Length: 361
Image (cartoon, one colour):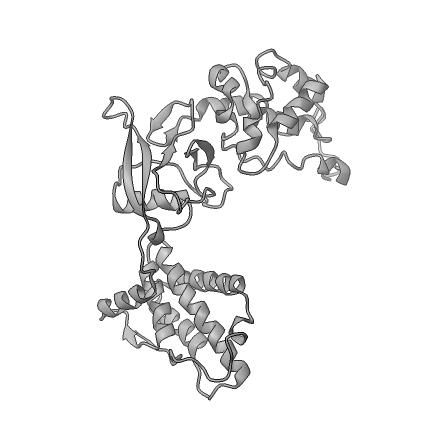
């Protein structure tokens, strides 16, 4: 199918340089990203993509000054969308070529001229490369031997802004044997927790430092058994979480007329800063006490969750929960080092909640 647009590449007459900046750069970037996302959802259907571009780009009458300014903003948005499209995953080339065609007024078929599409994408790519080195921890249990760090060269100008994007690019283009966990890409699931440049964090939320000249290091969470490469064994961590019984416990479990368990706004507010924990284990694996006593000490993440249920006004086993964690190792191995609070990707403060548990027992 033919992708057609009548939006020309010449500057409209009328608006001044100041008028073209009526819409802020941030606003244009936001629209560009939304536009690329919409094209991405339609990329499986060239016909729908053609209709979408035509609808945005069609212009049949001489523009008024106001419309000329609008067209200039639209053109700038499309230029940025083309650049953004080149950094997205599979299918980005088709999206970028479609947007680039809308900017320059090209007419081409998606099936015939791959060269034209490539030229359109190349026209909007940055002219400079920024090749950086990334040292990644590698260990394969099937091969055995000592773990090693392998260095990869990645052009971060042709890649997404986060460390997870770098890992994807390496796995897709250089080494398909690289193993790591990931899921949501939004800092919600906690799957991609790892040690990045010496600090625990989520790869999907950790930005690549494009200004550094040295190699950037990516390793698994410290003091955890490594399954393979950046994948660690979370079995002990989850077993400790299970031991605190992280669910509502009631002595009378019968429903009262089918109504929910009432909780005041004040009591509900006490749970803020607790329920947001995503169990990524960044805090626990940054704690020296947990490094040396992970078989007995519950760790910051699990104790934070224990406190979440201890202070829940609907729970009826508060005393039993306190008795269960009141142990020289389970609770009192915390020495308030504060590493846990520094690395939490959700901005929580486990050390503070552990101190509150100590004050309650």
